[in-house]
Image 1 (cartoon, rainbow, N blue to C red):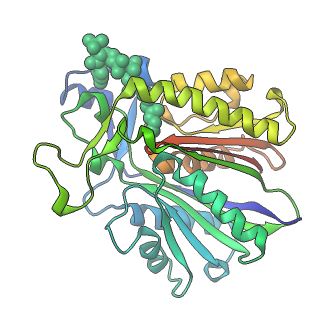
Image 2: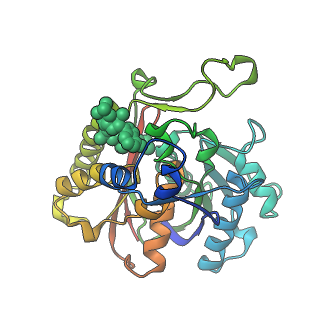
Image 3: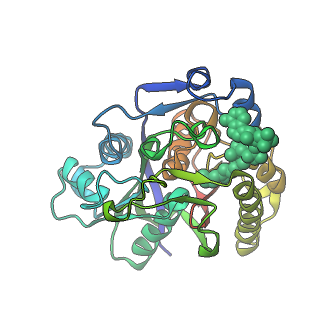
Amino acid sequence: MMYSRIIGTGSYLPQKIVTNNDLEKMVDTTDEWIVERTGIKQRHIVAEGETASSMGIVAARNAIEAAGIKNNEIDLIIAATTTPDKVLPGAACLMQEGLDLPGVPAFDISAACAGFVYSISVADQFIRSGMYRTILVVGAEALTCLVDWEDRSTCVLFGDGAGAVLFQASKEPGIVSTHLHADGRYKDILTVSSGLPTQYKKDDPPYIRMKGREVFKFAVTALGDVIDETLAHNNMSRGDIDWLVPHQANQRIIAALAKRLDISMDRVILTLEDQGNTSAASVPLALDLAIRDGRVQRGDKLLLEAIGGGFTWASALVVY
Ligand code: UT7
């Protein structure tokens, strides 16, 4: 049995920070409201010229260094992003160029905030089938480029950054199982009107629009269900997970899921306070943080989960 084992992780966060106090000067909001309703205190924002691929390249280099492998051992690059630098080429190709890996296959996966968990599932299939040995998966988002800074219901939520994870074929676990879902009927409650110039509407510019309360309710139910599905699939009980590595959308959603998993909040990796919601980058950023600060140890059982526009949602049981 061949597993996809994590051999290195890396991160990148832009230098520029926007605090809740900064936002108080821009829209009708308060630090108190944002902290109480979301758990977010600040977020990192791309500088001019910083993009999903430029951030992803730095995160990938950090992961390569942590893994102690040579660049040319990488067989495939998958970039999870909703905010690629350009419509084409994809962010993965730009990362491939930046990492000096000509010829290595590279493609993007667009599954909104669930994109990273979707991507590691794809990587796992390639490794299990024997087609590739070493795969770089990067979650990278310049999400604030889609933010309407006059819309207080969304501009307080999002941030930018990139996280990278290198997986390699191993007899030791590994990704144990992944569980993917989507439901396009919910396409309108979290959406950007268009990505194509000829379809831009003056009265509906291409910004993130979200019906927050509906998304909240859907997220708690869907993520709770996919957590139960993951445990049942692996004949595990609620207390068997060592760490929850959740998508960082809202502290109240995460707390509800921790309760469902019957684990205390100190077994949950949180980056929300400092980073906000970085969409497809949030899970790998949290994972890298917890591996680097020593909380996550080899052999620990991790439950990764995420949900995003589409709707798409997914989970992964991973032994570190
Ligand atoms: O990553 C993809 C998945 N995304 C998510 O999972 C996000 C899910 N949704 C949420 O996290 C929450 O719904 C939000 C944080 C977006 C909003 O929190 P909420 O508790 O659901 O607030 P709400 O939308 O029900 O709004 C409550 C009140 C409203 O005022 P009224 O109608 O009660 O007078 C809003 O206008 O809060 C108001 N409000 C704000 N007030 C101050 C909305 N945004 C703000 C704000 N500052 N930034």
